[in-house]
Image (tube, rainbow, N blue to C red; front, side, top):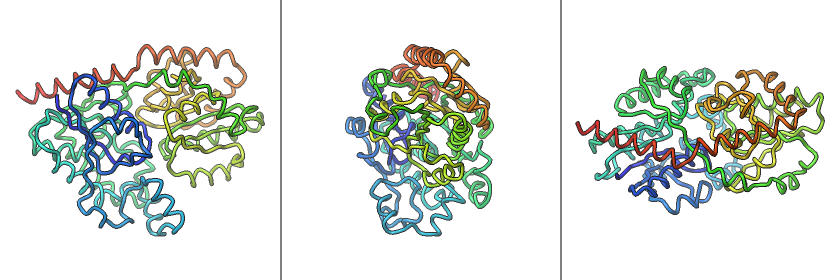
Length: 421
């Protein structure tokens, strides 16, 4: 098969980027021809080892460098971030980002960018496989030109479908437009794949469409090899009980719940530390930590490679993930690292957790419940060890990139066969 894969800009390290690049790599191993189409790539900040072995075509916004900086995406390269820090961000841009979020960029940036990608994907492909939204807009435009099926790996429908906070304030201006564009595009998708049943419910609610669950994988060996000793030593964590949450700092990841749990537990345990590893809206979370009086107990990291991240997982005692998200690759990675995980029941990865066997599931949006389960693990090292070992065994036996690629390959073949009838 010849497969055209479409993704949003690859400017950093995220679970969706890793998933697509690993899938492309595995499909190539299986003898398929794969080409990835994106509007921008930062080789250094993303996954350079994988990118250099893949065929990636960059199709930028039709205005290119003429596009006003104020209307470029929220995601920025390291260089752009440094420039913003030295020159000062536009007050209007900051206000719009805070109050309208990603939807601020829908009409001026994302619509023309995705249409441009859809217009320029060449002929000769058998199937289109798009990933993070709004790549479905590009996929449908390409489908109309090329007359081939589209299989959407819907890692997540747009957040505003299931996070009410993202439909408040000025966001109410843009989201109906975004909503109409998205639903129209999805009508033309041939097959929708999701990572969890939670994601499937969101797809049904948002688009009145059915979907098929297929779990992505993880490289267990990388996490088994990591020790974490140097991370603890470097950051003065040798005598601390370390909690960890990995992922970009965003509203739906609910890092604030982890901070609240830390504040509750700090009244009884003085040696607790909470580590966040990821990019995103750090300034807001720093202010929240200050307000809760626990900033001195919080450490912010941003691992630059898979190996660094594996060491961070190895350095923690308990992994926490209070997020409302349709999967949660970070949870699976922590399980692969043999760490006990405490996960929200609105996180898709909670579906692979048997409570108190290979992890702990807590009620969503209840920091006190999160704190209660963390305290139980603080006081029971045998339980921590047992949960971690069982979690690692589950991941090794059930979740691999090879199996994920096989499932996706089957989905492509079925879509091509059905479309040709």
